[in-house]
Length: 317
Image 1: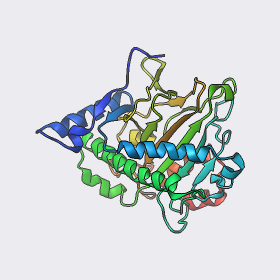
Image 2: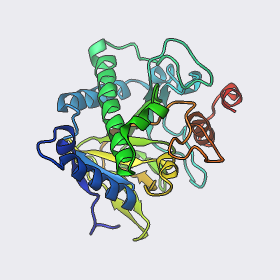
Image 3: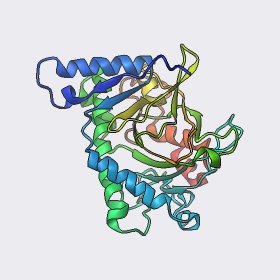
Image 4: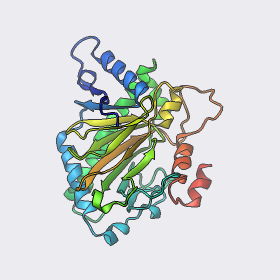
């Protein structure tokens, strides 16, 4: 382990509510340095209300505590846009001996109809009282969506661009949210990860960890070691995905990370992924010969891990 180093903890207060000249520029510089060195950083004073965080975690507990057969009625494999429930053991990465032990529930933009290849579609919601799940989850989704957009704006400024660039790739962005529960160590097979080592494929990730429930580890290339990331109340973990690394020309890093729940308790977390428009390609390099769109990257990444409908691939190719 790389216990002697820690991920930077950045105060977003001076950016969101600047009090003096240079406040915003200081935050932008800190984000640039952290994203270039680690691809990960922590943030406080981020603007997401504590009440929304607590209500979200309670909603996750409400849903995941239901019987498996009831949750499976909402299987994400039945949704054209991967909305709904994923049970433990359904995700296996190339190179991993065992599938992930985690279970998850996915939502995204609430669109009334399915639009091929499926990244815009209605969400799937459990039959639960509004205050027990849908209300707090949807409120939290909107709050972290705002934070994700703010991080994109900061990253663009850190590269010397205006925030107006957002208009070129974020008119109707794909924003996905993954709510996760990890089983205790005693219910995990030997050698099984909560989530195996991977990089995030796309834009920026806004991660809430249940306070005091550790498990996230980030690979620090220079040390060739895994860095444990603490779970601190009201502190978010932010990371850049492969798309950000590529769009930035390699200035920002997309780091491998994994989750191992080593303790005898369940662990909750929630990741909001803020990507961009389904048809958008790199706005910072219009001459990029690949011209891969956000939608094409989504299909390429998830096709390696999940059993998506063949129609999704055909529509996105």
